[in-house]
Length: 445
Image (tube, rainbow, N blue to C red):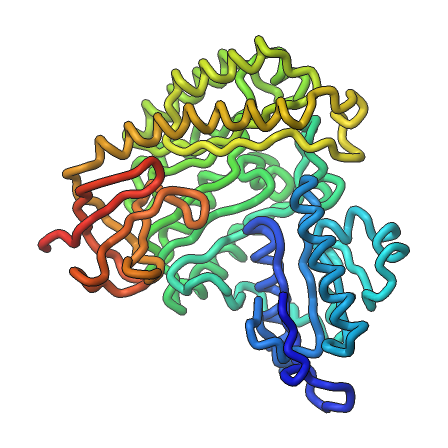
């Protein structure tokens, strides 16, 4: 990041300005939006990912999930620590998952940072900025995404015992937010122009057990779908074991429920599923996928896989490849295993070379590219309802109901031939495609 010294505020200026930098997933994004909301309610000038380089205080919201994300967070901290030493910023604060997980080590290795905070220490962070935590702001979150869509975090933490995952270390036990609070927040978002809400959590399907004594995701979906102005509701991060089947009729019957489900499976070999402590078998997984597709016809299924986990043999990997080819997921991502401290898998030893991990990931993605191309080719000639996200280069860029922002396919509309408004829905006829993009023309209404 480039810092213009002439643009930076210097010590002695009376008014502070805060720049919030967010790394990692959409859940971190929501946390940063909550920080932004609290600061503005305290009349502290603040921006998210400011490009002006005129803030004298920087808050870095870090990710600590896997090696690559951790390195990006560390590099960002070091960059701003150096900026502080050069007098380009006055204060640097670090929060989020990396800070929660490695606070003592970070304090020792990068002492230039003024203070480190964990994932549940927003009041303490605000206090450092002479700001009060405003409880009355419940639901009044200022979003940093385009206003027509927003992420809605329905719970925090996770109780699952997955071998590879350090989220319980960073985020703690599962804590659901009450239905009435989520409805209130959604109504506020809709009032301010949000048309699509994307439900996120470390684990969606566990929702409600701690508050209501049972899984109540179906009840939450019904309540949210009644909020006026919300046209799309999308589900991400649904755990396959003990999947709440009662959400399927809601997804099928409610018009504003997207027929879309992100269900990370991670593997398909029974041996690997057991080592990964996923609580499900390959046979039960196939049965579940069949039931989801049967109960919600036309549903788009997104999943993620992990390759190179300790104990994964060539036979396990071949079985995973066959599974991906057979199931033909609409969307699929793949991670190479990251050896994380304080996880069960860390005790097993990282016994698969990085080169092998990457080769396996490339093979899976090659299989998926062919599947995705075949599926996209079938869409040529069809017309879809598209939500327009932005204008980029010579195209308006949007998404169908089958696509979540940032991670899925996009629909490209030639801006020289057609005009559509960002944030609006438009009916688009597909005439061409690549593996991960669709090309369309605005259909006659």
